[in-house]
Amino acid sequence: MANIFLKIIDGTIPCYKIAENDDYLAFLDINPLAEGHTLVIPKNETDYIFDMNDESFKGLFLFAKKVALAIKKVVPCKKIGISVLGLEVPHAHIHLVPINSVYDIDFKREKIKFTPEEFQKIASEISALV
Image 1 (cartoon, rainbow, N blue to C red):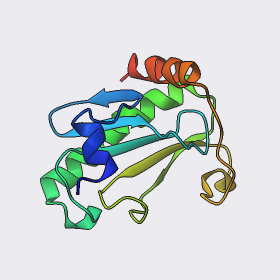
Image 2: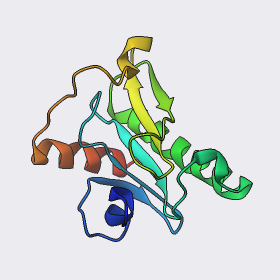
Image 3: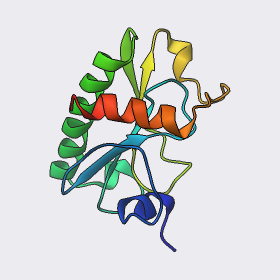
């Protein structure tokens, strides 16, 4: 059975897309820790990020860097935190989270709620800068 990220890649499930190329996709997390919280995924299904071949691994992180720099220009924050957990969805992915302290990237925190219009506005603003 296809995981949720594969369904997002093939368009079965919609997303608030930030950036995309032939190999990678970035989109807003719909249960964000902060405004601009973005997921970056390879389009090639790989469960564990360290099982990726070196070229794909480097490509994923270089793609994530471009996205992170755009997020930082849109969302006021000290830095863009990065987290790779890989337990909640069996598909390699990177969380890019705008942070002002180490506690801002605690996944036990209550998630922020946005309307579809707010998500779309955030995605559009970041996407314009990638």
